[in-house]
Amino acid sequence: MPKSRLTNTVCEDASELASRSHYSAASAVKTEVEPDLSVHEGTSSRFLGVERATVSFGEGGARVCPLRGVSVMFKRGTLSLVMGPSGSGKTTLLSMLGCLLSPDQGSVFVDDVLVNQLSETEKTAIRQKKIGFVFQAFRLFHSLSAIDNVALGFELRDPKQSQRLEMAQELLDKFGLGDKSHQEPNELSPGERQRVAVARALAGDPPILLADEPTASLDAQAGRNICQILRNQVDEYGRTVVVVSHDPRWREFADRTITLCDGEIEQKENDL
Image (cartoon, rainbow, N blue to C red; front, side, top):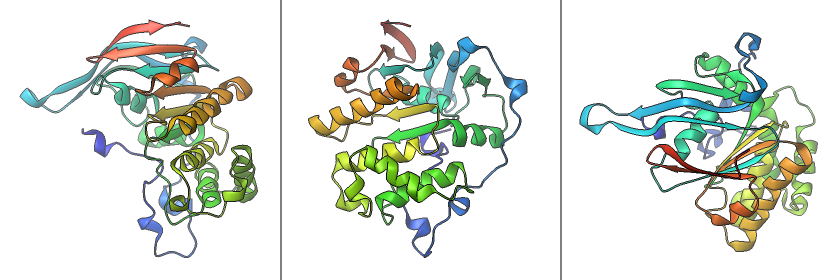
């Protein structure tokens, strides 16, 4: 299964919504009733991570194996940096942690739940309630204002939330974008767009934040601002943050650094 077919909970473009005067997350994402996951609970030492996980794509001579028997756990309330050359398996690991991809072999744990054997409905429920995603390309709806983009994050997690615009404004204020709330993404700088994307990822207060190259498109100052914002999510709110990046600036903000190479863990620094 190629990476391009991995399911995302947030669409990259607003073309699906262009013909509508009012948007609804219920029409953009099929809302599922959250199942009872208690029977799948693991131990507290398996809050987030993978055990002996192997993933392959393709068949025969075209088969590639981006991860080979990888085991790594991420503790609550920490910021972990995952580094490595292109093709080393970084995005594949993040996709498993985000319930977007199941391993061929091995186990995946998210918020103490063994998830790789769950139904797609159950995985969707975990993704919507427990995980926020931040991407290199921002993935904002281009025809929606900053406040509407963030409000959409609240609606995705709780369609009945009636105060989402007020709560979205609070998040934008917190990230220094209070005066930009009614501007569309193309009217914002790359750093501002990424702050909007982070605010949307945090809508609904998910305990886990997964970031794929969140500073790759930013200049030095804007990139450092994003590093500090995600570090603050750990220090002030106890979130668990996993960042995949080539950007060495993240080492200063991370509790530990994990290096992947050819689908295996090559090194762990400041291991917890």
